[in-house]
Length: 365
Image (cartoon, rainbow, N blue to C red; front, side):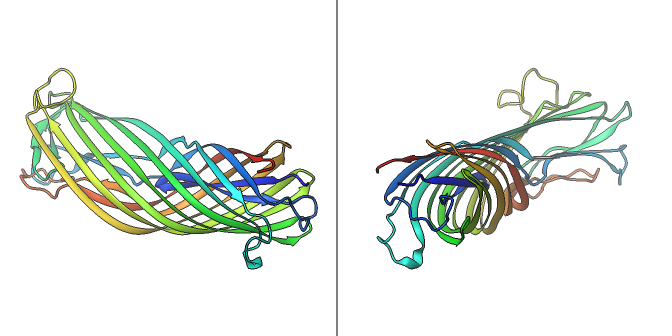
């Protein structure tokens, strides 16, 4: 019997995922047309890390120079929300015996189910010194009412931004192999997936002249499902080693719900802003559904360790729809009372990173 050699390529799910998934295919022995022992089950684990590009997050506060009408904007709350983190996962699958299915499905047809969890985080501090001159601050509430309507302030404006992305994804996939030459194979695949992504935004701020603390909390909960097609080339350039090149493209359906609240204390109080000390509060809910495109590519190197196949590589992925929040901002020194509430918005972005995978066949199953 010939040993089974497995290689994995890996791409991150946004949306998602941010969520990432494995694109496995089976390597051949030295001769790509050599028959292999039929009827094998396998398991695998993945350890990956990377960066997910996110839409810019705008807070609600704006500082304007001076007290007169038409005062220019000197500072607006804005944060880079790109996150870094890890995504561990696992897979279990079964390869059908050759001849058990129609020949047009290729060799070593297999079905597998995989799952992964995502944990990403970013913290940022921002400060702006407005000096000793009196300026104005406008802070619209996320619910569409003013928290601070052009109040006179001076001194240092300080913000702290905390963003967390948590997700899980489950994927069902079918794939097979086609020999293109003695050491070259191509593995097409089709898969369906589903999962949930939770994005949590928190902004806290104070102003030296005594306005604050203020607090902004928003949470996006996204349910997603979709399907994708993928293709992977494996070049076995030496005994027990292979280079892998793969790509995938698919459609994702996403339903995103927003829940948010904010509060502000006009006098200095200890601790964060809350129900016990807030002068003004507001809240918001919103939801939106979209279809998006998700695609990417990966490259990896696999080594046969006899008891398992180890694969190390890198990936990038593009998402046309990444959920975020559009918060109201007012850039005028004129007093205001009503604003457009915060709402769900979608942007595009890339994810990229590296991974280490291990696949273990169950001999004799």
